[in-house]
Amino acid sequence: MRIRNALLTLGLVLACTACAPRPGTGTPPTPVAPGPPIAGPALPADPGTPDTSCRVAGDCTVKNVGNCCGYFPACVNKDGPVDPDAVRAQCERNGMSSVCGWKDIQACDCVQGRCQAVDGPLRVGR
Image 1 (cartoon, rainbow, N blue to C red):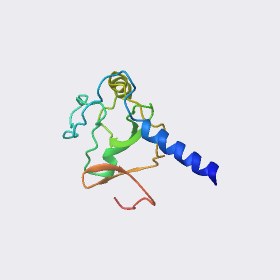
Image 2: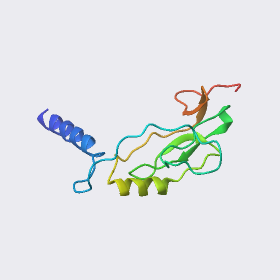
Image 3: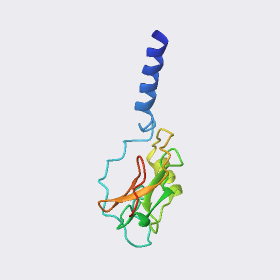
Image 4: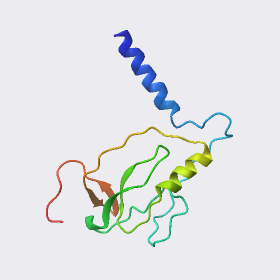
């Protein structure tokens, strides 16, 4: 029981420190609210905010949008650009890192104009 509690505590400490700025890199960046979705083919000003707009489920697909760890899949607009290398470079410039891991996304759907991962069975007759 003591070992399990120690491992849980260690896991919590590691999870809490994974996104903290590295020592000696200055002050952490100020969080910025995401801007409106980009409809055209140009890269978004912030590579970490890909276009998730949609009208129908067919507008959505799974792409590697990247994060400070590397690979990170997400449901985004099929025609929207993503640049996981730019996301990784931005993380390096800001001295940030993140926990490695992601949800295995099998399908995407358009829910209230936003691409989202499907949880549970797929709907029929879209």
